[in-house]
Length: 396
Image 1 (cartoon, rainbow, N blue to C red):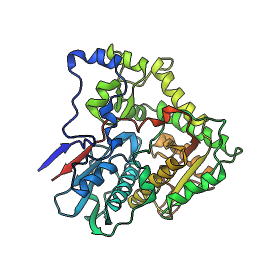
Image 2: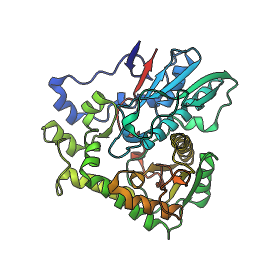
Image 3: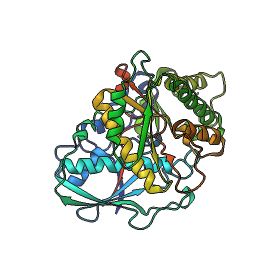
């Protein structure tokens, strides 16, 4: 039997949204809903199944647009089989599913770490029923990975950071540079499965900052790609709780517009509108305040390489959390839709010193490039990855 459920990590049951009659007033007076961040409390003490306990940590993994596109099958004893939900993908900005599979890699890494914390090893087999097709239009529910639990897991020191890890959504403190030793520690944490490098050199930052901003503008000014984000935008507590995914916005002006029925989801925000100005300012601020960049590169462009990049990325982000450094992917420059081609070429030249690959086997920066690293600047960095209560579909 297949059923959709949500792992409530502070208790049992499903999250209920506000009653329709009071939704408008609720959206105006409420803060960020506590139910939306329950996953960061850890699993319920009553949960005895080590697989479900591990999944309770894995669902906090960073993933594109907070789609949480994973499906976990627990019907086989001692095994977790992870699938991709083909309805939770980004065909406009991620037509080959590379970013989605990077998110799956982060999910798998946290799952392995959480099992090890309970004394279990995990034998991970990717694509046990064959790899997914190259393009999203051919994706189905064949598994991404099958994990078989075995005795003898060794706890990972980075696991202590799992429930502290955040993807910050605010600008950075440009008065606080990132030390070269900190950069080295971040790169070391990513591990040897991917090539990794970065810079905190003040002379190199301007070009990378410009690339982030220019590529963000391409995505935001291309109707099909910006509308992909608009359709996944959740405004105010009521929408955040109702959808429990996507890009959450809980600031006053959009919430008022949504409560009045004036938050338009049918077209991109027009230039000069408050929504347009806020959207542009957010990405401009993220780009201009970056105090360092790191990038992870794979030697091929296979789906397995994207998974490896995701596993490396979440380890890097956990180390950043331990060091008090915030890391946020600015991934627009590597997206494969046609309008982004020039930025994608520039991204490869600025980081790897060569053009974007045209054939299998050439180095390819994974979609966690470029990143910006900077010390945290205040409470805003405690905001979890955008969206609501972490979603996990189970098959049991």
